[in-house]
Each structure stands twice: as structure tokens, then as C-alpha cells.
Image 1: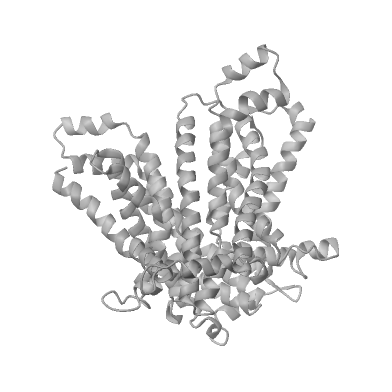
Image 2: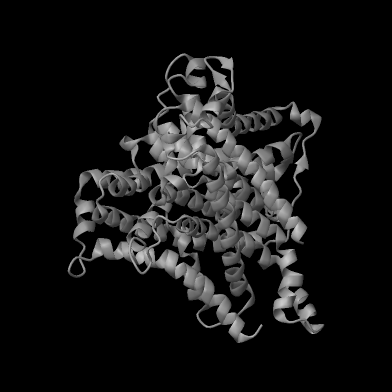
Length: 543
């Protein structure tokens, strides 16, 4: 590819990122650090206020506690998946993908229906467990979302540990926990640390879960920023809080990226041990019973919120009914969120598929530049394009309000500004999915095409792009899932005519209409499932 094309491919994504990410971040820094000159006045006011200090402390504490709980749930699963093959394993593995595509607001609703005063578990036990609207609910919901990350990352590395190290240690007398602590654990640490850091970051920047399940008593930095902007209309306070969050999240992101490098190097081992099947005798042994019990816990933990929402959508005064679905589509109830349900579904689909197209094109150009070209400033470029991974939806929404409310970039109130926000949120995950596949494509395949006379862009389109299809489809599904589930930035930017399904559910929750919220959530599930199938089918038909 000519140098002109190379520059164009680098300029376009950087221009998009500058306008819709860096510029909003700069506006936040200006709002919080500038008043007739540089000042730390507002940041100091936040840090000297006991209420805001308590929120910062709780945000860090709940993220750490959520991470530890996630590890406690995920590490046994990683061991089982890495070591054993057993009946129903593929089903359990498939169920593990559910949290990745379930909107957080739907999980929050599921927890309300399970642990509320009239919830299933509350009625089963006969008393209120005190889980809902507390730190316990936040930790449980975060563990629900993130323990599959630990299972997948750690089990993938565990299967690549060279068995000769363990055999040598056993020949020297090591066994049991001593063998695990001195030999296996050190080799697993890159995977444990990387998955822990990713979990910590997700929990640190979580918004919907603390807002709905914790309430303002257990507010996090995200909720505090949201309240300062949307309720108090105090942009100086919101910007100061956002600056503190940006500083912390970028620090954590830097540590995560470094840990990911160690994890990638550890995962490059060519040894891959196939899990051994459990014999019938072992299935009936204590080990088999424990594996079965863990699989059952995973099944209940992941599926129960989903089933609770589904059941509640068809339940009216203890009887099977479609009344909640009729209310969802009734003009008499729709004004609660400012638009009708059909409009909300159309908006969600429009935003979702637009996000898929934009984030995929952006990620493709960036990942190709990173993995196929050597150019001056490549490391800086790599760092710049990954910065959105360290920003939160609420901070991004604040930046958009400050940047795009006046000319020459008066975009506030437009539907495409919501799409751009969704693209910035989803793009880093699409980039990771595509980059992981491009790394595995052997360079000599492209070189063979070039030697036969193909131009570089033709070699990419005809040889490398089809081989990267799996990563592109995964990235596209992630982009759609993140767009259709997004609440924070959308809520800050939308007008009633741009209501999404997620906002409609949030409005129903706010008015405590659990049945209507459940029916809308089921519609969200159906729309998501059908859209995922369409994305996968389109990808297969193109190639």
C-alpha cells in the first residue's frame, strides 16, 4: 500500500477519536482545572469533602471486594474446565457466555425480582436477606458479570502449562497444595492478575448496577458524577469528580495493559493439554459431586435472574397473563418514557447496527496499522488509540454535554451523537477482538499474495480479511451488545424521541412497574438474540 494510503488509514481513525473522545476529555479537564487560569480548587474541594471521599473509598472498596468474590467463583471453574471433560460441559460453557450479552439493567431487574421483599428467594427462605439495595447486591451482580472472564482467561492459560514442570516437582516429592503453590500457581499468576485487573476496572467504572441495586446510599464515583450533572447541574463538581476518576482509571488501565502483555506471552506456549474425561467412577466420587455441584451453582447463578425476568413478564397476580406486554405497547403507559415501545425498539436497532458499522471500520483500520506496519511513533499511536478503554460512559457523556452544546460543533440532541458515544465505548473491545485474530495470521500468507502480483490492499481484502472474519463477528456482536445495553451516556444525551429499550426499562423501574419492565426486558432479549444471529449470518454470507 502506498504511503499516502497508510497516512489516510491512520488519519481517519485519529480524527474521529480526537473529535469524539480527546476533545470531550479536554473539555472536562478545562472545566475542572481552569478558572481565570489553572486551578486545583475544585479537585481539592472534592477531596476535602468527607461525603465525596467516602464515595471514592467505597468505589475502590467495592471494586476490590467484587474482584475477590469473582476470583473465588471463577478459579474453581477455571480448574475444572482446564483439567476435566464431563457430561454437560459444553452446555455449562455456553451458559458462561450469557453475562457477556446480558444488559446490566436487566440483571439488576433480575436481582430485584429474586432478592426483593416479594422476591423468589425471600419468599423461599421466609425472610428478607437484606441483599437488595446494599453493597451485597452490588458485589453479587458484579461477580455475575465478571467471573466468566476469570474462568476463560485462567483456564486457557492452565491448559498451556507444560506438564513436565509438575512431573519434575512430583519426582522431587512435591504433591497436593505444595505442588500447586510452588509450581502451578506462579505460572498461572499472569492469567489471574490480568483477569483480576480487568474485573477491577469493570467494577470500578460500573454505573447501572450501583445506581439501581445500591441506590444513593451506596453510590460510586460514576453515580456521584451522574448526580452532580443531571440532578444538581453542578458542572464544576462533576468535572472535578470526573478528573479524579480519569486519573484513577487510566492508572488501573496502564497496569492492566502491562499485565495483558505478560498474559499474552504466557499464553503463547504451544503446549495445549486436552482435558481428560471423567470416568463413571469419578463422576460418582467426591470430586465428581463437587464438579456437578459447581456446575449447578453456575447454572442457577447465571440463569436464575434471566428466568425471574421471563417468569415475571407472564405473571399477573399469580396467573399466566399477557397484560404486561399489552401495557408495554399501550399508548396509555408509553408516555412514562416519552415515546412508544416500537420507537424505542427502532432506536435501539438503529444505534446498535450503526455502532457495529462504525466501531468495526474504526477497529479494522487501527488494528491493521498496528499489526502490519512499522512507522515512527507506533508505540505512541498504540497508547493513544487504546485510551478510550480507560474512560467511563458517564465521563464521556459529561464531555459530550460540555463540548457539543454550542457552535461550531452543536451536535447535542442529535441521534448520531449517541451513536458516536456508543462507538467510542464499544470500539476498544472490537479492536481487541480483531487484533487477537490478526496476530495469529501468518505474514507469509500475505507475502505469497504479494509475490503473485497482488497489491497490498488486495492481499488484505482477499487473504487476511476473510481469515479475520471470526474476530470481526465477535467484535461486531460485542459492539451491538454494548450499544443496546448502554444506559449512562445515552441517558445524559437523549431526547424523548430517541428513547431506547434500555432507557424504557429504567423508566419502568423508576416507577416500580416491575411487570412492564420485565416485559420490556424480554423484548430486549429477543431483539438482541435475533440481531446477533443476523450479524453472524451477514458475516458468513459476505465471505
